[in-house]
Length: 528
Ligand code: GLC
Image (cartoon, rainbow, N blue to C red; front, side, top):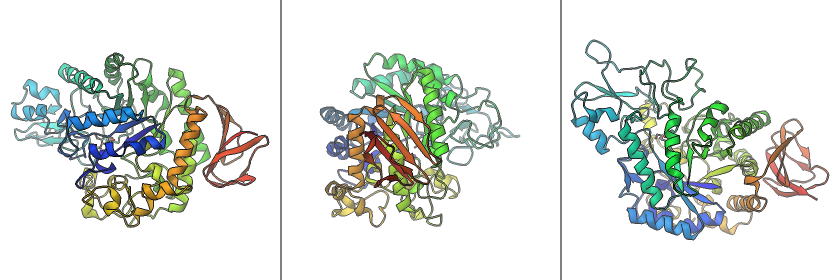
């Protein structure tokens, strides 16, 4: 079980933004949940245009988050508590403040410094049109023009120029960055936009929005996409794997938004990554047939390459599970909510989220929790527009709310200013009213709290070694899923109700169970 920490929003030792000493001070709490490792979203030197996913120096900590010594202290403390530390690697693009990009801008057209990125002439009479029709994931064109008339490619914000991974120096630099952090004791990397590094060098037009999800954009023309999931990307991961193999027990997990199971499983072949996120599970509507189909297909695809599956329901890019599950559409949905959008039914959402988490935590493979998911935090679904900071909000002309609503500073102590997030009582995004009811200290004291539900689930998961167990799907009544996983039987009821089967007794459940298991409930049973 890996626990994702979003450093800006986890805990702060001073001001409005979370920091590394804040994280270190809360690691005991993290260990108490029963997780094995933490993954930290980026804390490197960065102008924070995309909140750290725009890196200006891959080998230093942003002063906002602390110092390199603070990073070492964090890794050491985690080690004492038996937690591994995984850091985020952002190889698709740098910040526009990275020395390489500054050098490229200062250098003339056609110079070697520009070859580390994607600089091209524009189209039209005076090159006034972008070189291709590609759109940025955050909205607007994927090209920005520089003073001398050339354009550079950025699949995300204009402050995030894409690196040219065909360039040997780019490859060498990242080998060295991997070693830099492995030498400092990290256990591995979560690889940002892992399916995007290789581009078709002929840069053909695409006639589609550059959706992050390869093969899932309904408007995309058939055939390979010029920027997502290209075959050449795998050479990069083979190369990195050789570096990681020098460090025993190190790992990497790719952020791979690829819809096709077989294509996605290629990233976890024996000589590539150890894990890649299975976003099909997160994106699936809360329906027995959909979820059951995703589980079966994901296990089959990964079994075929001998890799474990990776399960995730939440992260810093999607609507928090409790809110998503309380919407009429329970699939991935939009990247956030406006106050004018449909109100999530939080009671229903919480019931379903618990059922989904308990199902996820039973499945063999690695599972990920996003900070606050163990507290049952909902999305901040009515942030005032002036508080929004995600570049996607402005880049889409305010049509998309962006991802701020899942990044609200965490509530620790109900009675403290900012719910104990920072001693100054300041927070970089406003916490919604009523946030204190989710505070960790309140939940500690309540045996029936969300936090204690997750803790118990993780304790049982460890005890029954479910992560490494084998799974057999059983015939299930309509509207439910039934699995034998290790010694346990796991039943999720989506609709209707299912009797507790003969010969089995309830070990743990996401909602009260009598003789029947009711809707939106997962139950772990052991033989009676
Ligand atoms: C990934 C990150 C996201 C970031 C984007 C660009 O999708 O998870 O937060 O904005 O990459 O780096």
